[in-house]
Length: 367
Image (cartoon, rainbow, N blue to C red; front, side, top):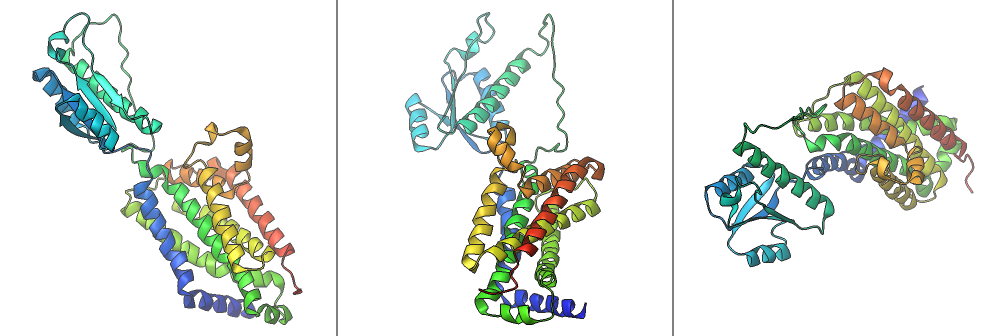
């Protein structure tokens, strides 16, 4: 144990002496959680809306007031239809509302009236969301004109938002960003640990020492495990105090699951480090090879249900997918271990498999 403790202390010295490693370990996660938390959102905000009011009466002004009251819309009046087209071309607006000249006169007639909604469909998702916003506002305006209208029957939906009552769009991304940070940072830093010894020529000293190979890998992984847990505490504090995230589940369970996932990432990093011969190759495989599957196949950016069955099958071998499901269930929904034990078991099996492969591929002889 004294040998192991001394070797772990040596690895801590290596980490703290390397400013680039510290920047990747602490600077990159903080930057990612802030940027992803504020930039990534499924909500569409600040939608530019041009309103061409050809009626210029009291009813049209009430409708425009409702549009202005919506926090997601940036309403700008225009005088001519050519102005609407020019604004679309310049990208200043994404949608337009055209109120006809006879809007107020036809409003209470049997045939009713129409309001034209135009959207820039070069971005289909934005166009669909924006038109839904505008349609809902117009329908709400119509209902406010005749609140006591008698219908043969009426169904009023009673909506309730579970687990995210404030509809904070960043909450959906925080668990995925945490998984992405651990998958990239922990894997990347560990992947260069063994191959660095090869490049520096110090691997021979380790191999001729009485230190067993398994202890070499353990000593390499322990500092990054401790520092990754410190990193996780910082990420949680940023999520709670900066991104207004409420942790509903058990903190102890969250830390236990995060520790298991970090060990999985470290095991993957050790495996990459053992099968590569240069730090550049190890860093490229760990950074690029892990970032894209984590972003694409975990479900936090793109729904897995919309993907072909081949990609859905591949996603089952991505460790971050199970960690994302666990953290989302515990952190956002307040569920317990009874609800995530299957994902935990899969993550444990992946960790054992990766660690076994890393030990098996650790060469005790240099070629």
